[in-house]
Image (cartoon, rainbow, N blue to C red; front, side, top):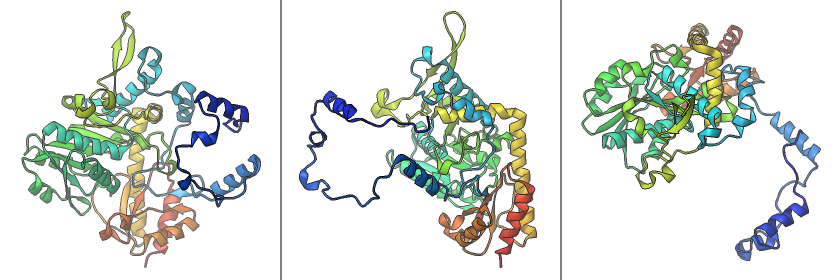
Length: 449
């Protein structure tokens, strides 16, 4: 059926009121004082019939600019990537999209195996020992990692690079208020974390160092050098937030000795869909696996020796650890994790590597075209699929111009970094064509003085 609801009849209403022991809707709301109840008429349109309402809402929705109507070069945390058609087919199966937390393994083997496969692929990409499932998104996963580092090291100072996603930085500041962790922000220099300042701030009170790889500006941080600095304080942890697609080509953080690697799996099989929902991932070294928030799925065998999957080391804080909890993560993001798993499986190891390589190559081609059209790329150095370009004008006005030409422009960095007024963060993914890149660079160049 087209409409996925059933109207409530008078009889339905009477039965529900009777079931809860009241005679009328007035009685149901009797606890609300008359003096504060709204007595007038709401300033809304007259009700319309179903057909008219659907038509009106469809027309309103049609006014939205979206990835089907415009070519997007906007990234900054949410990206327009290829999604294999099989993803939607699998996650639309009722046993997956109606599933919740798989507490009963005997009836949840499919769900548990899907989560296990997600964890396994994340471990392979990040180079870490253990990964979990059911993190909300990359930002909250990073904040959870910060609090974990403070709890693990018994220290209250965390050094966070300003070259991480500004929204993630804001989430960290919110999360640390409870445990009282001090966040020291490390400036960036030429688009990369200022290692001189990092070295000065590192001391025996440092719980962890937090970087993004590639960072918010698209540049690839020198994790080997950062690891050397962190090692000067034996108990300090290295936390890295990483775009998992980039790890299909770049050296994974685990090989640099990262202790915790987190990120957002939106790049695999999850549409942009106006900013959410997403799927965070959280991977650690084995020594930290008992501190990981969320849930872990493990592989075992039943009494007949057949392979099976169970929840293990689950940190469902609200009913297990309570006041000793280090996290309150509990919601189940397994459907989005499944979408990412199906996308990664469909691409395969070589396909994923090729997809990451195409992002690098097409972004490099964009840099070349921007330069040829008279624009200046703000930061030098290796980058993945995003780059900062100096446009010299109000980016919001430029983006309105680009919108008229059929493009969703890049992110206006003045919204988050005052010092980068007149700078645009541009994302180029594998699905952008040479013609789209050429035309975008030309249109952007035409707006430049």
